[in-house]
Image (cartoon, rainbow, N blue to C red; front, side, top):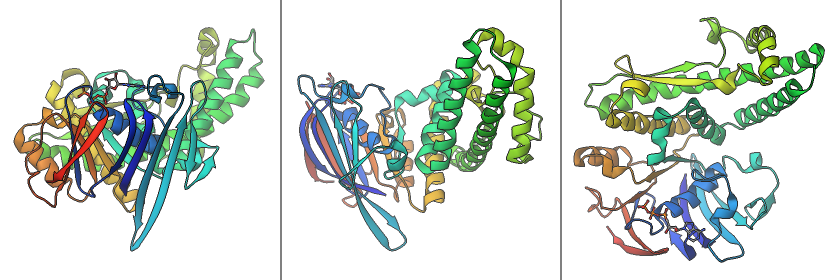
Length: 376
Ligand SMILES: Nc1ncnc2c1ncn2[C@@H]1O[C@H](COP(=O)(O)OP(=O)(O)OP(=O)(O)O)[C@@H](O)[C@H]1O
């Protein structure tokens, strides 16, 4: 997968920008607050259909402008076939963003999801290890929805049903039969969600272990532990979705009194969490800043490998201001590792190895204007 070009008009601090990308490393250099992250945000929007910084689409519109616009041309490769696609987004104040794919307006996000696939690693991602379980669920969801429309559908259904169940719990004296109808549906989608998350984590753990091992000079053994948001028997991963549905339904019934009291659904995959261990030590609790950062980098690179396995091609990698945290040796190793992947990196300083003219291209950003350096 490759981004060929992007065009921005009245997007964040860009009045107008037209930029072509190199298939290798694209290093975007600039001082603070010049527009480096804004550019990555535009690219990421085309993959996740939402920003990693805000939920309000109106923030994308340049101050003082009446609307914002972005267009991306990308190419996907399947065997010997290359396919060109175009994504467009229009932003107006107080309106939902309008999305077009290949010139055709798209009503449903699920129809465009997955056209462009990208993995982003930004300093904010440290939250995955440091902050609350919702960050870790968000990590699973945002990576999985890009590749699996089935997962996206399951997640939306689960959230919808839970909202309705919670609504009912808030009523005065809701009928038991009514609650059990929602329990049945919630369990069906909850079981699917847990199965799919478990599968995803097993697959990325395989890659993350290997990557983390090599990033730490073979000193650290990383493991990922899925912690479902309800108490399941240890052998639950071997259960069929139907058996798991039954188990979850029984647990919901057992918790009904507490749910009625709290007027909300207390247990289920909406409470899932993940634990990361290094040599059996819980990184969330005891890991150093550097260890946490390396865990997230290993996770993100693992997701990239997982997407390659699932779809047959690498996603585009977006690295926002994270290379300066690595020493020169690690920066070199990382660029070497990323050879087959189109990568767009923002940084304040150049990276070692970028002297190689086949490696990529250097750009300079200043006040929302991008100057292209000679091919480096
Ligand atoms: N809607 C908007 N209209 C105009 N300017 C905006 C808008 N949103 C953000 N900005 C401006 O964009 C700039 C920040 O750009 P960005 O976050 O891309 O910085 P950066 O180059 O990544 O800097 P750093 O290295 O500090 O992370 C700020 O000056 C901010 O005021």
